[in-house]
Length: 103
Length: 143
Image 1 (cartoon, chains in turn brown, cyan):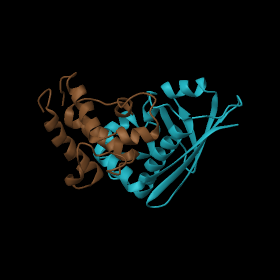
Image 2: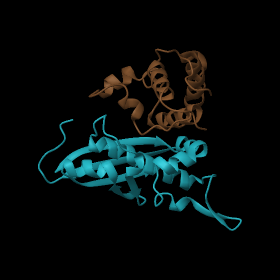
Image 3: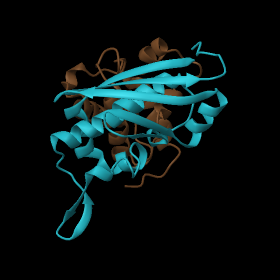
């Protein structure tokens, strides 16, 4: 994937990742979909999604780095609300904007 | 005195799928080399990690993962605490030993948690792990 993908490109690739990781139909995936609350992801799924994002977009992600990017001092309930497809797109965009993709 | 408790349930098959798809990253970030010792095999004269897990091996990995997640909950880690899951080493079978390293060991010391005790049980489909964090400073977690 070329540097600085558009949000649309990120959404397409991310949707493929979510379909494979959560084994759900792509029609269920919207930008506002909450990964945990709406799409039913659990801790193992978040790990699966993290590794697939790393492989697809070419950068390493630390444990809970995606969660920490949502904000500080968040409760579990706030994390469940804020962890959406949109928040993942923002995270990936910010990271791909900083680094050169390495396969 | 009990600092806090944590519990987690994990699907055996889900962990096996995760191993099948991401064994390299799991070796780097989730499991320690000692935890993976039971998975080494000799194939054509070469020592390598098995890709095709037996039921026992799947249950073994699932137990490690469930215990790590339960430990995270028992430590009541703040969301902004940086760590990797291999900072938690889970050894043993039915009665587990939890060994912490890196940032999590520092967190343990800072919060006066002196010991983590864990146990688990498993079926063909799922593994459950229960972890207790103990402290001698008279303070339980208020998180």
